[in-house]
Image (cartoon, rainbow, N blue to C red; front, side, top):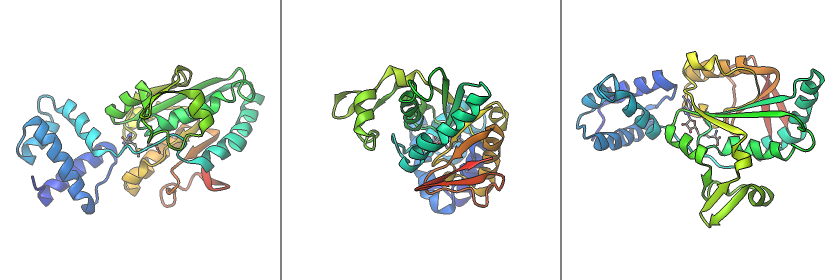
Length: 277
Ligand SMILES: C[S@@+](CC[C@H](N)C(=O)[O-])C[C@H]1O[C@@H](n2cnc3c(N)ncnc32)[C@H](O)[C@@H]1O
């Protein structure tokens, strides 16, 4: 069903105020098609009635989750940003371990914010597992993956992937940490799964964000590209507050905090950069 301009604005503002994702006018067709899917499923025939359901009709909260599952983009894969991972493994992690080791605090906390189906968080888990006998001997490792989309969180917890997800995974990691059951079924090792906890979290929810404390590495890659400048600034300020003084904040390869936050310092490394307080 065609989405009238005024209805587009109504749904656009509703979604924006709820989770920070902003649909420009050029994305109207996208919102229209996702609403159409949900309306077909629920048997609702007008945009006005569907809006009423979201705003407090019986089952509205459940339907809202389903709509958010439809309007979020969840593209991801293991080992997505290799220059970032190389710098982390060879430089940023050893430096951080030295600083924390000196004060006797042998615990690492890592957050994959907008984790989608878990590939980013599990990539970190595999890299850190490789350091367990050396640099991270006797360290406690906590990795948290959060997302607003319940469907991808369930996939993350399950830990079963297809060939597209593992396409960039180096053979060493693929052989060691996955059991390949068929050309399309890669089952992640329980040792990797054990290191990561997945939780539902809306990054735009201030009341929840203030509790995400004391992280050494925060990844929020390819999430804020769907936000506008004001909603990016609000969320990034939480990342700033929740990052340890010696920690690092990472965004996606094509993203930057230019015009969003000027408190972070940029740290350059070959092929990329990270942010630091
Ligand atoms: C494109 S994926 C990025 C996955 C991974 N970080 C990566 O770079 O490969 C973006 C994820 O951000 C999530 N997301 C979008 N808005 C969000 C919000 N307000 N709170 C939490 N997660 C959100 C989406 O559900 C989606 O799974």
